[in-house]
Amino acid sequence: GGALSMFSITASCRIVKPLLLSGGVFIYHEKCQDAQNLSWRVLVDEKVNTLPVRTSALCRQMGIHLAYGKQGLTSDGYCTILNDSMYIIIRKGLPLVQTRFIVAHEMGHILLGHVGICHLINRKQLNLKCFTEIECEANVFASCLLAPACVLWGCGVCEAGEIAALCEISLQVAEERANHLMLLYGQDNFLTSPLEQQVYKQFCPFIHSHRQ
Image (cartoon, rainbow, N blue to C red; front, side, top):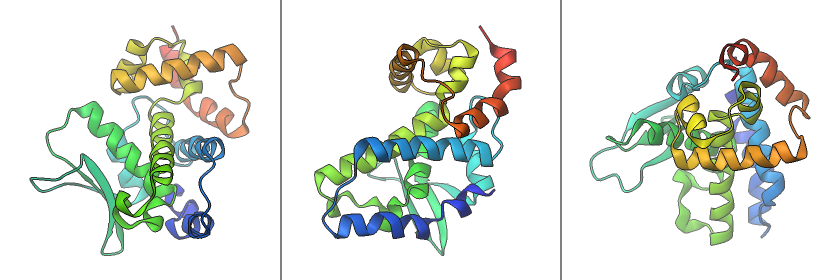
């Protein structure tokens, strides 16, 4: 697919890495907005039009390899470069909803350029503030990719349990999305971006068949 080439790791590193080397820090709001926009771009470019988003198929389309880690893996998942290819390594035996979110989260790290900042996303090399913001960005990307707000809005789904079932995500993540939806409802803040409008249009057949 086109998204990995458009948001190439090298290009992302050129933008973000100097910010860290010069002692700068991420600006949370702007970076999380970037992560949200990137999730929309991936959905559009990879022609995703149904929920739940199939993370394994999406990785295949984008040239990202998935593999299970060896016994004793100290984290549930991480991403790395092996033989010039991007890999997401996952712990075996995790619940499906957790695995799906981990894959989407690690996709976020890859596409946002974090692998170039710190190989294997080695948290020990980053101060706490940078680590927290990098993880927040990846979480925002994963949440928006797996449960795009405009699609949930179009389907008339706003309760955490409904979101969890429709998107195949954990109740905890669904509760966070439900809270975010309530903020958007209060601000009447749907379909304000041309990119978000593209996502909505692409999902329209699915939305019409699932509208409540």
